[in-house]
Picture 1 (cartoon, rainbow, N blue to C red):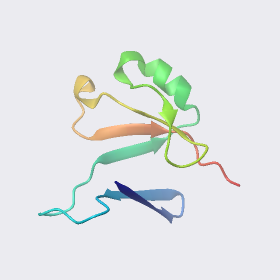
Picture 2 (cartoon, rainbow, N blue to C red; picture 1 turned 90 degrees about the vertical axis):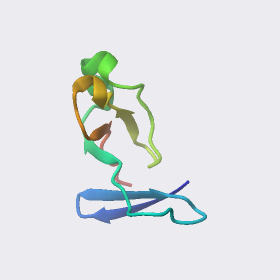
Picture 3 (cartoon, rainbow, N blue to C red; picture 1 turned 60 degrees about the horizontal axis):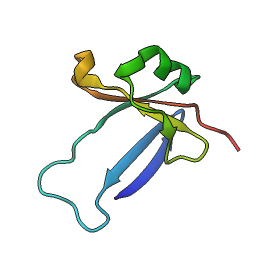
Picture 4 (cartoon, rainbow, N blue to C red; picture 1 turned 45 degrees about the horizontal axis):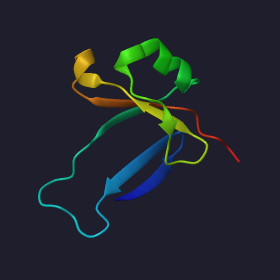
Length: 86
C-alpha cells in the first residue's frame, strides 16, 4: 500500500493505492475524516460506535474509525487528532 498526502490549506488530501499498478475502473473515495480537538474523548462519547483509537500514519496524530453501518451512515467516517505543527 502506498499513501501520499497533499496539504491544501487546512485540508489534507490522502491518496491510497497499490504501489505496483492501478486497478481497472475509476478511482473510489474511501470516506471522510474529520479533525477533532480530543479524539480520545470523542471515541469515549461514541462508545461502541467507534473503533479503538490508534496512532495515525501522520506522526503525532491519533485516529479512530466510526462503525458507520451501526450508525446508519452511508459514508465511511474517521475522526483524527489535530495536526501537530513542528
